[in-house]
Image 1 (tube, helix red, strand yellow):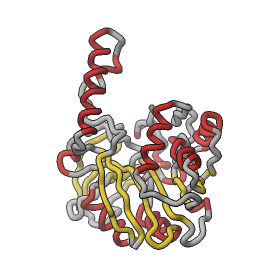
Image 2 (tube, one colour; image 1 turned 180 degrees about the vertical axis):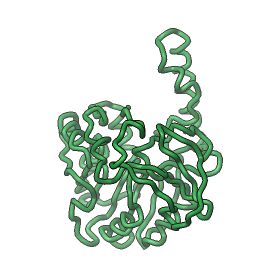
Image 3 (cartoon, helix red, strand yellow; image 1 turned 60 degrees about the vertical axis):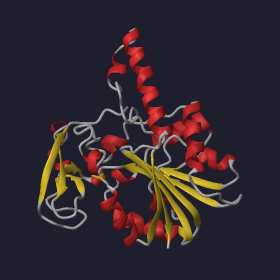
Length: 289
């Protein structure tokens, strides 16, 4: 797991304060909690959740260029997750064009390649790219989705997992997604579900300062629709560890009690997933109008 910096450890000239809601520009918001010295705010008008103090975008290397940030390995679990994520897409004909933005460990790209799809991927971290190549022999481009220079209407499907909360301008990002998708093309995402009960869950552990925005369907749906992307379905994330029963305790030792806690935690997660109960992370399939 990445070690994220405290606000007090960062040069003040590399930080910026956000005084108005980035989504609706309302000046009124309230503090939800502090995390590592970064205030997490909620807009009083539209409910959008954002960091009121954050790293300036040009200094993100302080987080992502750290060689300890990325953890990539040729694990059976990663490859199973990659295949399950691919299976969330409707059946695509062999040779269909697909791209993953923020491809991380490369497992989804590998699954798509093995499934007969024409697939590419990119990631902002060169360290992640190197590890994906070494672990899975997957080639990823370095940079953002814009850096890949995809053509208008090139893709049958675009995937991004756990990426939206990192983006400084998701509004323009959704416009770019819409541009590169074919008519009726698919946009598959995994994103945090910060609404209702889950807006109160795990406060102080939401990933500041790398996670600058947090979404619920009440804010995300209109953002997607404005960009011409309509949500087809929302499903609880099968690879979320929610409900986190004994989750923290199990990592603190190797005694029989800690092992039992790990077993109970695993059983609760599998049962929760099997029953299809709500989680604090979701998969969303949207489609270009």
